[in-house]
Image (cartoon, rainbow, N blue to C red; front, side, top):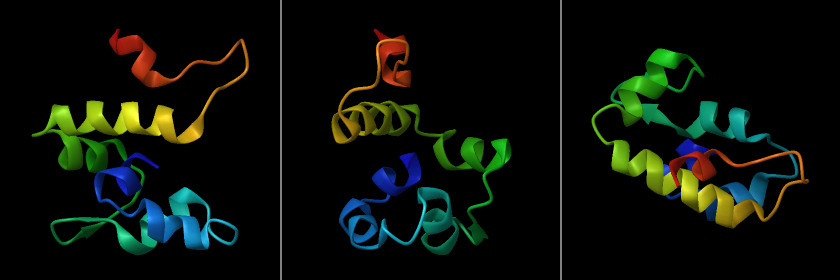
Length: 81
């Protein structure tokens, strides 16, 4: 979902979320240079490595987008505080 937010594809994903999981949507639409999304650590590093501010922005946006978790769960952006 972070890649979808980073690429500004939230509205496009909303139209297909009943039939596609975020990972499958990313595989179809997200690239880094000529490389397609592959859910590897190296892809995350290549995509966000030069721009940590983008990663932080996406983590915060994801929290806003998803609402709240249960009492035992937390969002990654809560670690940034």
